[in-house]
Image (cartoon, rainbow, N blue to C red):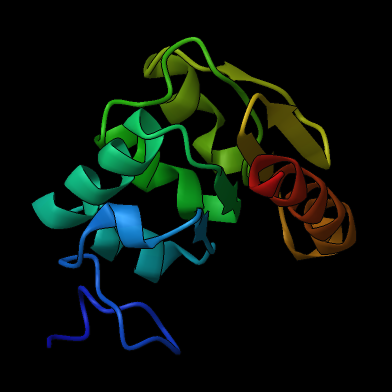
Length: 130
C-alpha cells in the first residue's frame, strides 16, 4: 500500500470500501491537504462517504479535498482563512467561526479551535450512531 492513499494509524486505505467506515475526518496542513486532493481515489472516497450520508469533518486546509471532489456547493463551512476564496468560488457559504456544523458536516479553522471542533465531532458522530 502506498503512503499517499493510506490513512495514518490505520490498516485501511481509501482503496477499501467506503461502507467499512463510519465517518471521515480530514486534518489540515497545507502539504498533506494539497497532496491528497490530487488523487482521484481520495476524491471518489469522500464523494461516496457523502452520498452514503456519513459524517465529514474537516479542519484547516482539509476542505481542499471536498472542493476538489465537487462537494461544497451550498454548504456553510469554515476553514483556514486562505481557503475562503476557494470555498466561495466552489459555491460554499464561508464564515469565520471556530466551528460550523451543517447537517453531518463539521468544519473548523485552526489548531486553536480544536476543542470546539472535537466537541462537535463527538456530538455529530454520536447522533449518527444512534
